[in-house]
Amino acid sequence: MQIKPIIAALRHHKAGTLLIALQIALTLAIVCNALFIIHLRMAHMAQTSGVDEANLLVIQNGWVGKPAAGENASMLAADLATLRKVPGVVDVYATNAWPLAEGGTVYGIGHTPDKLALVTSTAVYFVDDHALATLGLKLVAGRNFHADEISATGPDHVAPAEVIVTRALAERMFPDGSALGKMVYVSAKPSVIVGVVERMQAPWVDNFAAKWADYATLVPYQLMDSAGANYMVRAVPGQRDDVVRAAPKALLAANPMRVINRDNGVQTYADIRADAYKSDRGMAILMSVISVMLLAITAAGIVGLTSFWVGQRRKQIGVRRALGATRGDILRYFLTENLLIGIGGVLIGIVMAVTVNLWVVTQFEMARLSLGYVIVGTAVLLVLGQCAVLAPALRASKVPPVEATRSV
Image (tube, rainbow, N blue to C red; front, side, top):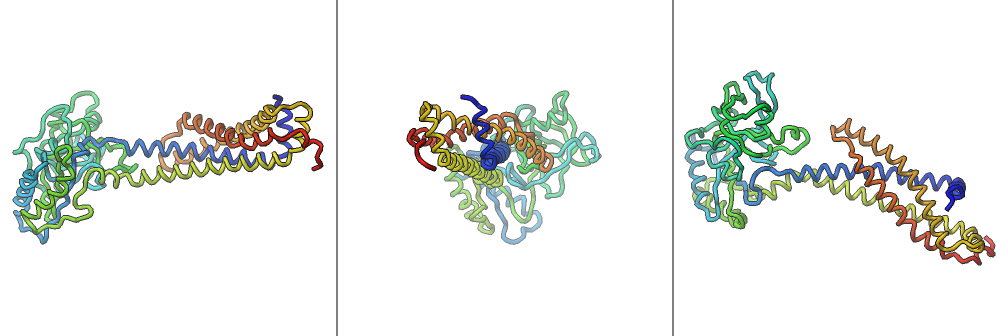
């Protein structure tokens, strides 16, 4: 089929042609970037925390009244002993924070006590000798803490003699060799790295903390806080829900002078993960809805415009049929015409997509748009355009030659 007659015909419908081309371009620009954002958000949500999420739960316990000085340690020990006796509990420990919790403490860590010379930031987790077994962490080098290394501390005092770090942090601190036995500083006093675990994600999941999300430091402390304590509990596989019901009852039976909030005082990791990534999930859903709506509107626009053109050209189509054009010729004509409009639209859209992405990169420090998204978006828009024009084009191909003899 000759292209020149089609282009000549489009010049007589400049407004409609330009409108559809710009609509395709705008849709491509937005959809490409939306799909890119959806992919980034989904990848963010899919990060593994490094802990046994399927079998973990957190109990946030608050004391009624303020325990007297020296009572915290005994109350904490009693609670841990109570929880370890609950049927279905593998192990438990008390902590200040946990992965995805949007809480906890961040410290600078370096090779000298001078904070101006820190290497990076790290999430600091208070743990004891039961933490690795409770969390299901894989020790890839060194050893666990010993029971006699665990000490009590307040929320603002961190000066551990020994620490366990994640593999990512160990490699960041000592890229040229093993981190075991090396000195690091999270305070003015040096700490010796006695163990390395494969992975334990930081509590925060926002973009600010993304660059050090894998940098975690475990310190051998039990947090003595008069407000309460957080217990990380690991259940036997398949018995987590039973432990969720039984553990708070056991704690209240042992000491009723406590508050365990019914709504979020006991959380499974499914709840913690859903809450941590709710903004990412919301953004992915929003971008998906916008993409679907734009594609639907673009398809509707193509159908409407082509149907209008078919109505205007019935006599012209009838003349072509009378001169020997087959139904297939008419069908190919409208498909080719729409394809040319689509190609023009996607070429403009590619430029717009890259421009929008460059602006997003500058404003929000996001990654650059991959060429793959532009290719996929272009293919989707062109196929969508051809599918949308198919019904009006089929109607045009059915116009009989007798239309040529009718008055307009």
